[in-house]
Length: 205
Image (cartoon, helix red, strand yellow):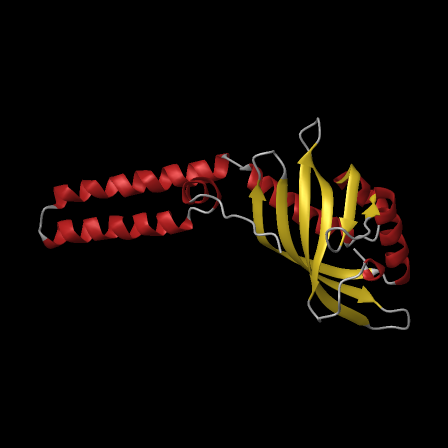
C-alpha cells in the first residue's frame, strides 16, 4: 500500500489545522495573566497580548490560505458526494481524459469510458442510497500530482427491497488540467472492509 507523507508541522499549524498552537497560546495567555495577578504586577499582564496576537495571526492565515493539499482533499470528498447522485454525467468532468481504474499494479484496468459505463450500469441495478467518506491521508508530490487515500461507506438499494452497506478504501491520484482543476488520473481500489477480495467485477463506484 502506497504510503502518503504527512504535511510539515509548519504547514499544518499555519494553514490547515492550527488548533494545537491556538490552544497552547490560550493556555500561555491565561498563565501570564494569572502570574501577573499572583505577583500583583498587573502591568506584566500586557505580555498576554503576545500569544493573543499569535492566535489572531494563526486564525487569519488558516482562513485566508487554502493549500493544494486541502484542495485535493476537498476534490476527493466532492467526488464521493457526486457519485451518490447516481448520475454518470456529473462524474465525467472529474475524470482526466486518460483516467484509469484498477485494483493492483500490472493488472487489467478500466479506462475513462469503461469507468463511466461500469458506474452507470452498476447504479442502474443497485442505486446508491447514501454515501459517506473520511480522508485518511493526502500528499502533493514534487511533480505536481496529488494523492488522496479515502474510506468510502456506501449504502446500496437492493432490487427486492432493503439496503446493503459496505466500506471500501481508495487511492485517488489527481493531476491539474490547463485551467488549474484537479482531475482524477488514476483510481486504485485498495480494500473492501468485509474482507471480500477487491475485483473490477465488483466495482459500483
